[in-house]
Image (tube, rainbow, N blue to C red):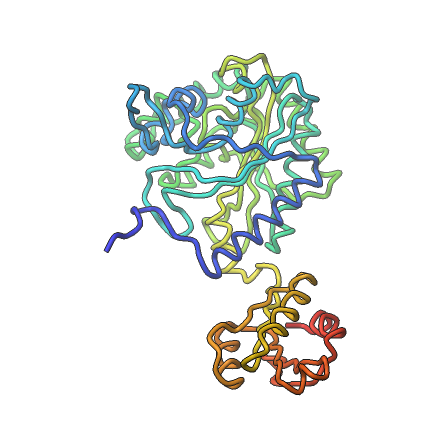
Length: 415
């Protein structure tokens, strides 16, 4: 028997339904903020991620699915999508479009890491990017959008974790200060962090293996921000206060990718314990420039869809169930069943016509196995009178209904 590749997953049944409902909520929410969809390719040249994500990151060093194609070029299954959007911005001259440009995406990404609940080697990512404006008001609006996305999905006990990681002017100084503070603790660091000490010490703040006592004792990057970054961060906080978005400052919050600057954030839920992050993002003002474009500020956030589905199932926060209407009928009344199904579907409900046949009692058992909200029963007497029997499958009650009134009867009931 051939099985799925390790770290990949078939999405079906309840998970598929929640996935699509979640996707619809995400699309509708970002649409109200003026975002338009972009669909980048799954396969990119490896150089894109080496230059943007950073050669010293875990993604580039350990997790990318990279191979040489038949033309001898190094290509990679995308591990994230911001770099792809930035590449498209430069390649297709999006700078000629009205600024700021607001884009969203959803699609599969690939990282070679240890599979675990809610985290797979193939995973779907939903995200937004805002390109072409460095206003701190946009930082606050994107954070507000991220918070609203989580609210609209029915997630509870939400708040924002917020930090600034500075820019090219002030971050190098902080890195030196951080290395000095870490020197006495070097032998205590995990093997990955010993390497990060030299390549990217900020990533030590993000390491789950290091003790919180150590990380919290280190100098705060917000104390070393340059004047521009400090002013930007103060304005972001002011706008979040105006929007009534609850947030807490976290000096250990950094993002795992090298292209981030200034504002970084996560939306977290207090119901989820230690692994409480629902989504994360931040500002990246140098990425477009590093990929060959002109200086173009940017920011955004991304959500792992599988993680979101697991969280929603655990919290029972998936939006209300759709009503499924099952249609049972006596032999020879298929035309009546088709007509009734069409009426129900045109009203926006899901209708299934029994295809197995048999007695009405047997068809009712089929409906029960499908967890139907209602079963419409069509017998010879009902066909002659232009009525149906409508059975509420949960309340176990049944009554005769005129076909013209069927939709209002279904719509007025709580399935």
